[in-house]
Structure formats: C-alpha cells, structure tokens
Image 1 (tube, rainbow, N blue to C red):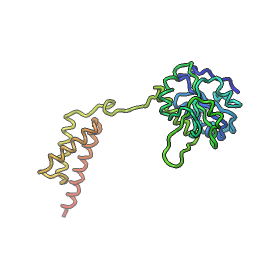
Image 2: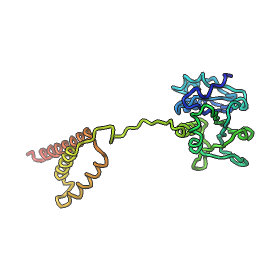
Image 3: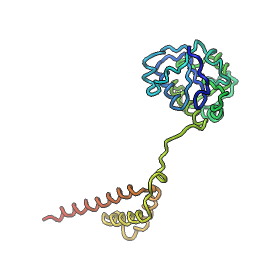
Image 4: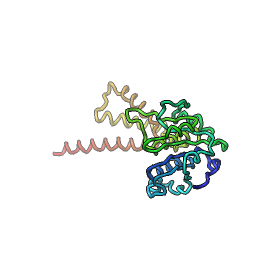
Length: 261
C-alpha cells in the first residue's frame, strides 16, 4: 500500500475518489482518465480484482503515466481514515437519513472547498455489481445520486465518476472551455462588403426568377436579416459571392447550349 498523498499537493487539493473492490481493470483506467481530465489527482482502490492489469493502462490512455499514483488499501476504513468529509455515491436511499444531493448540487456546495488544503473530501463508490454496503454508506456525511430518466437508472462505474468529476470541477470554478466566438475572434465583413453581397444576390435571384420585381423588397429584407444574424466575416462573404458568380456562369452555359443550332 502506498502512503496517502497530501491533498494540497495538486492545484485543486481534492477530492479523493475511492473505489471499493472494483472488478474490471478497464473501469479503473477509465476512472483514472476521467479524474485527471477534470484536474484531479487522487484515486484510491480498495482490494481491486484487476490491478495491476493491462486494461488499466489501455483504458487510461494518456493518463496512464499516473497509474503509479494510485493508492491501494485493504479496506474502506483505512482508505478514508485521513478524510474529514465523505460522500457516498449510491442510488439506494431507502432507510437512509442522509442529506441527499445531485452531482451538480454537490459540486456547487463542495467545489469551492477543494482549494482549501485542510478540506479532505472523499467520494466513495461501490462495486460494479452491488454498489456500496449499508455499513459503508453510514460512514458518510452525504449521499450523492445521479438523476436518470427511464427504467434503467444505474450507470457504469466509470461513467458515474466522469459525471461527478465534471460537476466537482465546475463547482470549483476551474473548468475552462476552449471557446471560439466568430463575432469577436474573426474580422467581420464591412458594411460595404455586405451591401455588395446583397446587391449581387439580388441580381442573381432576379436572373433565376427566384424573386419577382413586385415582391423583391420583402424577400431581400428577410435574406438580409438572415445573413446579418450570421455575422459573416470577409472570407465567408467572398465564398458566397463566388457561389453567386458560379450560378450566373452555369445559367449562361446552359443557355448557350440551348441556343446552339
């Protein structure tokens, strides 16, 4: 058994993900990958059936280099001994008097505490087949259950960990998405470029009889609104005008063929 890693050794401090007797190496590897993708580092295993195992490395993918950081324990009691707040991940609520939360509620409530080194938060997951035993749920302060829709409510162990890790990351305020906003990241077309596009479009639509002289203003107004909502950039306007030019050229070629003797 490796010694517990100080929880303040990583950017988010915690939480510690504890898996009770996981049966499949693939679930361990997938769990490790999910945890590290969300910025966490602490995975503890209680009597794993397949560890070490090639499936752990295969399913961990790029997180495989962190396999050596996984901590092993002989029982749940020793795995949670240094933690001061435990959450049981289970759908079994009958007979329990715990505070019950969803992963999102848990992330919002506990996420901000993850940056506090003195907060040692543990998330306890049961076995793939039977989940957590009652005695282990009773060790915990809260119960967290993942809402589902339909008759089949249970999730794969690794899926559950992914959902919980994501919500804990978002609750901590550390989630950062790569966002591309075309209205700010690209140079938008100028008003003159847009006016030239609309004039070109109107000309071509007249040529192909898509709009009629007595109704063109209404149609062009709708088309202008459509393209203005799209916030076109210079390159996109160029592409559209190229398409319009090719429409005219295609029509001219067809007319030339029809007029041949």
